[in-house]
Image (cartoon, rainbow, N blue to C red; front, side, top):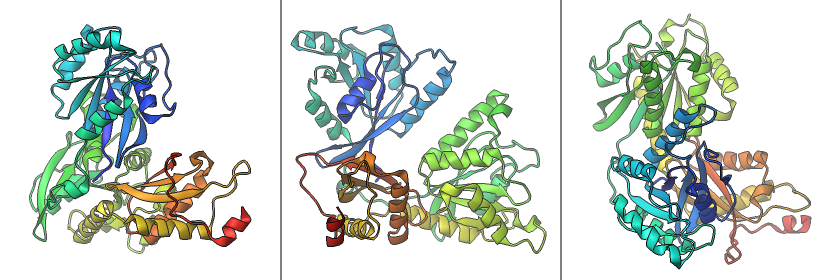
Length: 455
């Protein structure tokens, strides 16, 4: 089960970023009286009791951006709501209910997610009656709070955790169906590949680039199991997007990546790697999706060209994705397609895997003994314990004394250890370093005697 996401939405200047910082207990998002300060999504991993979840801050809904980025901000908000497990609809008690709140409330009626109406700026009992007036928005119970005066934080967290999905041990286990997104630039053979695995002329195939204009779900069977392949429009460079069809095709392709379990990034063996390929790979990595680099049309490559040459080229081009497996196929004839699909299933299983806390702590202990974190400002960072809090992607939290003291290089070292020693060798891993609270005395990653002497 992935780490649940709690997304904060609302009109500009109702205090969304203040609520975000207040819940996180840290000043992460910029807070300003000027509307439109928040543009991109900001995410922070929270722990409330035994539950972990990510809170996500978003820009103001319906705001007009001064730099003509209104559409991009709206896209970020919509993307956040698509992945949300719970939405916090924040309103301003002191400003009262305004037309913009009503417009947002109407929009949220079409969102099939649990929604909490949070009346921020309810700074004292004298404002409670005003907050109750937001019942008229039809969002059920109104949660009163004040980020400024630290009012009702525990009550809000309790309401949030009660509405989160049940933990793994309480969920009904069902046989998962893998969703496989087939992405790539135009004319790399995606639709031909889909027709091959579906064993039917399911998609229109043409030499004309851009034939597929929408994302299409195609169900197919393999070894008695049913899967879903998502054929996507071929992407173009941003400067080449000239029509609404191109614009929405690009957005749907990205949405398909977000809802996929595994992504097959297609390359044409007869063409050079393009900027679009790099943009797609970056988007896949940013969304922590298991991926296979698929070099298609291998039958058209001149005999004698070794696969090692393409492998080296891909590894050099996508250095941050060195863990991604590479497949060489011919979509037209089906050569190597069965092996590719079997490998995709293996990635799907890797992304769902869980590791016991004891095993994880033992691994971190050995990693620290082998190569301890370097000194930072004459202090040695310390890891107290580790735990896996989610899957798809595997999400690991390291509780430590000074998270900011761990360099990016050392974080990469730890990720490398997890890949080498755990069953996450070919899938993305989310790694969080959180500060241990003063009440938490747990210390399962004991340093060796030599380390203690070094300190």
